[in-house]
Image 1 (tube, rainbow, N blue to C red):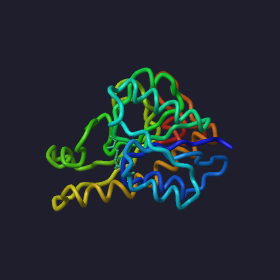
Image 2: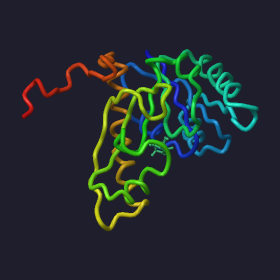
Image 3: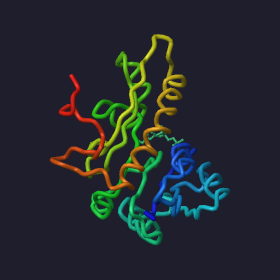
Image 4: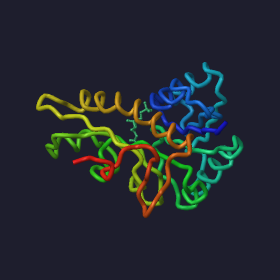
Length: 207
Ligand code: GAR
């Protein structure tokens, strides 16, 4: 069994999708939030998953928060740390400590629209397609090797609410898929890019 530790800051719908996916070979060892009022904590508790809160407001700086967070995470012997709507920027030390076993979901087609307010910015830019990305986390924000992406069309009548809802439905599909691939040991990073064993590549016959 691989231990997943999932970090949330709020609603936790991606965490919920991963829990509901019941991925063979994986167990959600803990759900950890940086905000005591994170709505997702109740879902985890109701599913018998251990929860913890490491409240960033109780720490003087980023590095002491990250240290406490890492200690809490490591108490659950994680094989994979899953950021699921975790809205804190992490220090280089933290990221290094979990190198190769820390992943994130971001609500845009990276490298477009890193950072916040991705749906609003996509609408303002007039892009015709938008989406979500699951990637390994590196020290540069929203820049790590891409594991999987999902694309949605953008319509002229979209607003932030409709577009974010369309993207979120796909987030709930691609995040469990990425976790499944990692748990199955099928991903590797080659020259900064993720290869997934058994997933079609251009060389196998795309035109
Ligand atoms: C998701 O859309 C996720 O992609 C995004 O926050 C939302 C969390 O929803 N993450 C980021 O913006 C990371 N910078 P959830 O709590 O229901 O999973």
